[in-house]
Image 1 (cartoon, rainbow, N blue to C red):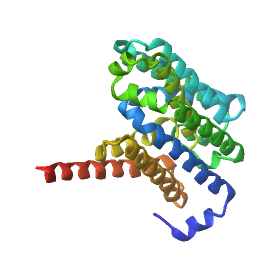
Image 2 (cartoon, helix red, strand yellow; image 1 turned 90 degrees about the vertical axis):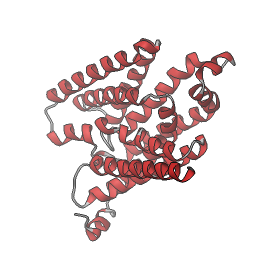
Image 3 (cartoon, rainbow, N blue to C red; image 1 turned 90 degrees about the horizontal axis):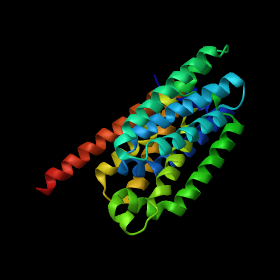
Length: 276
């Protein structure tokens, strides 16, 4: 149950404010990258990348180093593996499946080796806002700045290659290095979501808001703006709703994101009927 007074009291705590800021940063990056992920049909790749981010975070937890750094290293390793092993489109799904299974298996083994609290293990899978501190917030912010800066430089050719890859190749767009670079950006974004929504539910931020936005507009700019708004509502709203009951953030984030997606599908269907 939502308790307004308790929620307001918890908002006075530093770690809760840090979690809200972290959620806002993650929502911004997810919203900007999401429409490109949907356009390029890379949803399964995001899931595979998040599993390696989970593996890196589990290794960091076992070694006693920052979870954010471990997740970042694991996600980048996943992006490089997917880029190197899945260059042929016919091999891509099987490569992602193999990497996903490997990452999840190793991550579970590393968590089994970890002697600490079970809550820390569970938090890697479904998110734990209490784990976000000032250092993690600084890492998230720095990672977000790097991702957005790189995306700003490559956005036009990347969008062209995403919408019409054959024509882009014919026009000389360097798709050979754009795809691996974008995979690395996805890896960084996936790693950013591990401590907030957890490795298993990063899809809720990177895919669902963008899929909802693409249902109601064909404009890349409007889709990006809507995806950012949807991701922020899901992320920040999920954190706020989870405070009083003390349940994992991901439960509310995924519920809000899915509700937005369903609403957008209904709007799209209503528009289609009105056009006839």
